[in-house]
Amino acid sequence: KNTGSSLYPRATETRDLRTLDGIWNFRRSPPNPLFGYLNGWQEQDLYKTGPVIPMPVPSSFNDVGVDASLRDHLGVVWYDRRFFVPRGWADNQRIWLRFSSVHYNAKVFINGEEVVSHEIGHLPFEVEVTDCVSFNTSNLLTVVIDNTLTRNTIPQENGFDFFNYAGIHRPVYLYSTPQVYVEDIITQTDVQGYTGLVTYNVSYKGGRSDVDCLVELFDKNESKVGSLQACTGVLDIANANLWWPYLMHSNPGYLYTFKVSLIGSDGGLLDTYSEKIGIRVLNWTTKSVYLNGRPLYLRGFGMHEDSDLRGKGWDPVLWVKNFNLIKWVGANAFRTSHYPYAEEIYQMADEEGIMIIGECPSVNAFLYTEELLKKHKQSLTEMIRRDRNHPSVIMWSVANEPQQCGSNKNCDPYYSQIVSHVKDLDRSRAVTFALSDPHDTIGKFMDVISFNRYNGWYAEIGSLAHITQRVKNESTQWHLRYNKPVLMSEYGADTIAGMHNQPEFVFSEDYQVALMSEHFRAFDTLRHEGFFMGEFIWNFADFATKQGLTRVGGNKKGIFTRQRQPKAGAHHLRARYLALAAAD
Ligand code: GCB
Image (tube, rainbow, N blue to C red; front, side, top):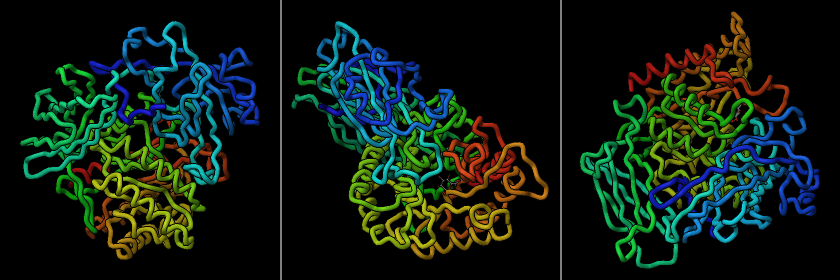
């Protein structure tokens, strides 16, 4: 089967697109994961083989029901729906089925025939289904999902606190392309003086060798500023408008439209596809990461894709609000802790000038097996393939809090291979990991040292006394040990909105504010040392977790509640971030 491209699905002059989002039928499997297959559930409508419940797509399935067994379900679930294929697509078109994310393991059937399977959530997969669909009648689409995590999944079981939401998390599309189609576009930009350079590589498929690529670049006013007739090349853009971060420039997030057309030998248009790109250049030293020659100071957050009822389901309402809040606070960056987010989020970040550290789904890994390494690499391949053209993505985070890397001898070879894998795919961005063990030896593989530390929380709970000194010491030690730029990728305190205590007491808004102030004092000294390049509070908003002694209705370290209302900490952070932005 043709497993297609990594391009975001779009209708163009030559491509058509239908969404398959909506209410699907859903059923949990009995504990035997094979039960449904053995009873032929994939071969007929699910409602004919037993009771079904309505399930929204996209959404996690966990929180839309009324019983804990659905919320906490671990194992196999079944989804299905019917769809029609437009008659017009029968005319020499290829037909593609695309899932933007299904968590964790997915098997997809059309009219009873298995067409594709995919492991690892948070990343898209697609397959050509031209020969599997019928134009004369409706088609049955069945998706079987298993959310069981093991020692050899990415992430591994039990290694993280966020809730293991599952389901069809992002949009599902049916789309058409011509026979000869643009398969992939890779762009990389550079800046020399006032000139922007766009190096590109367009690949196409479809069995004709007499195809030419016409590449055109348009500015925001839709004026053509460059073009080339070649599938690989470099466009020189004089007086380019560079892509700048939010609040660093009066016109942040400037994007050009990169349009590719495939032209046949008779001059006819075969396929066309456009995407937005930003012109900017990144480089880094032992002290900092530079964007367009200017050192970056990142003011940001760790986040989650998480909200009431939807769990991890893509929700444009939530994310437009999130971006408005990110800008209101004066932040310029976030880390996609702890997995790649929906593609639409990177598109918004491109437009708004918000910088992203793109993290793959490896969270708190332990036991470094060959099988895990293979999957970890696969997650990076898929993430980089998907996200590499976004100007907003400035760094790759290849893992959050790898475990035992101070003691386990397998760690070094494992992470050295992980980093070389990333470098083979993309040398234009710095690589980081969010470290938590002060004895970690894997900092040597990184371009930037990120560290997570909960002073005043997991260390010395309730005491503010040593926070400033500890943050300063640890940051300095990381820098001295590895001679790399350092950023604090997590710090924070659980805070119940509305709870007040004077003098400050843990879980109160007052304690969160006081703990933040102690960190700010450290950051202010560190900023002037020249190697400290950013602060990311944990977390942007409260989020769901598994049940546990330390989680009162979830992880409450948000500066916003889960409903995106500000705690006192949000106002406190805003005052700081806006002042930092003014000094930027
Ligand atoms: C961490 C993890 C993050 C947790 C956080 C916490 O170190 O990276 O996923 O949510 O601590 O609040 O415990």
